[in-house]
Structures are given as structure tokens and as C-alpha cells.
Amino acid sequence: MSATRYLVDTNVLLRFLSGEPAPQAAAARKLFGQAAAGEIVLDVSPVIVAEAFYTLVSFYEVDRKAAAEKLSLLLQQHGVKLRDESQVLLALERLQTANVGFADVFLAAGAAEEKVPVVSFDRDFDKLKVARFEPTA
Image (tube, rainbow, N blue to C red; front, top):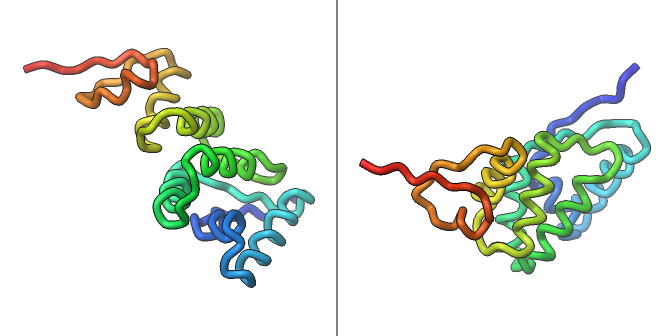
């Protein structure tokens, strides 16, 4: 029999990382403990990671580097299934040094993995050291 799989909402990640409110944080810690023990699988999508990063930085006022590090560590725990894992983890790594949004680093990580350029008018991609194609009229 396989472990029960749950799709994880942003608030579960935030409760675990922030410790607030205490009862929900305790429940989130227990949940991640169950995942670590192999009892359940916590399935996390990139959009949830993006929202969690944004909320940690904007609402909880966590430093960008610290927010990316905390999320990366949490998402690599046993029992967590991170969709597009290598792309998300590379994006979180890039967020620690680049002052751009999650969507840009996620797209840049995908471009780097697939060795294809990004088509964009946004020059932030130049900071991320990926090939960028800017369309012209």
C-alpha cells in the first residue's frame, strides 16, 4: 500500500517556517514529521513555492536569501515531492543573489536546464546569465 499523497497549500509551508500561529505550526511540524517517516507524501507545486517565497519576504519581512534557503531546505526533506524539483531548487538558489522575482528565476532555471533562450523584453534575464531573445517589430 502506498503512502497517502497530499497537495500542499502555501499556508502549511508558512506555518511550518514562521511558527505562527502556534497550534497550526505544531500541526504543520507533525505533518512534515509524518512525511519524513514515510507515512504520507507532501506534493508541492512551483506556484506554491513562489507564493510562499513572496509572502515570507513581503509579509514576514524575511531576508530574500534566508527565505530562499529555508524553503530550499524544507522542500528537500524526505517525504516531500517537489514538482519540477531541479528547476525550483535552482530558482531558489538564484533568488539568494539576484534581486528578481520567482517567476523570472524559475523561467531562467528552465532555460538553463533545457539550454534554450528566454524570449522576453525584461532585461532582468541578463542578470541571470541565460540567453535572452528580444523580439522586434
